Image 1: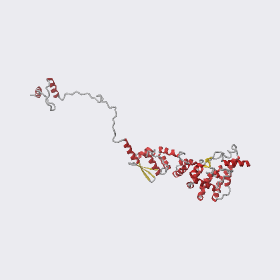
Image 2: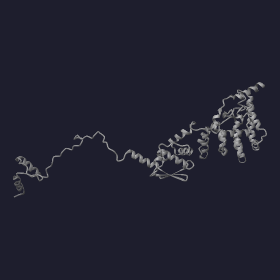
Image 3: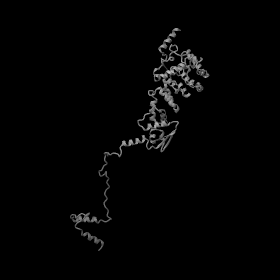
Image 4: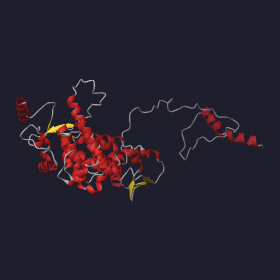
Length: 414
């Protein structure tokens, strides 16, 4: 019997019942169904199955949900912020060393880059050295503390060192805060300006030096009364005496301020006497005062100063100017050829209780010599913070009542 015949006999005698996956006999099927079942079981390999169409989830109607899924991170945002803040403020896991002078600061490079333009040029660097000529260790320390503390505000102490550091590192926001204080006369009185001026000197901060000088104003003679003024280098004394914003009663007080500094250490300072006196505007002095300067003086050092030929020339030119100025009218055509234009005047102030602030015609007046000026300086020292409120600005042609009366009497007696 052939293989096909054996298969055919097998198909002709199907079992009257079928077991599927261990189930008990199923109910009887009709003959037609049985043929279909047996034909599917004996399908040959060469036959092909019908392919089903490919269907996506979207085509089946499963659309993406439009509602956000609410869930929480493993750690809260507050935890992250507090953790980062702790790393920055307490200088944990720092990645760059900044060397300033003999000191080293452990910092985060990204903090430096966020706060300055200077550090933006550095990438993958673990050590940076800053010029000690422009940045001091204290200045950098304060600047970095400002970077890492959100509520930090610049304090008065070491403010000049902080300014120079901020300027060098190009810290725009910090500079704005510093200038809001340094450039506001309401926050900076004249004596504070003098103190800041002194702090600027060793730091080579010329812009701040000039700004602070312009703010001294009516605190000038308070500054002259200090030991710090007497210890200044000649070039800084010259700048102070040359500045037109300094408040004095007359150019005679500026002259005496120069004399006070020179005579404090005359043996070592006589060689710069001519330079210092070039800051004095002798042509703003009245003729009677310059005339007295040409006479014999009691103090030997003062006389030695006045005997210097260059200073004698300054006094003579001032005297000539005063005399000619009085002779020429304000509209005289000779004023320009004779160069009779007055130099810039100072800020004139007065105090009625000070004798030499009165006109020489007034009975209260005293001639301003070394002794009288020293008494005035002592008065300023004793008055302290009360001195400036006692001053008043002098308006042109404005006289104190006693001086006005004395001048009227003199006119009547002529």
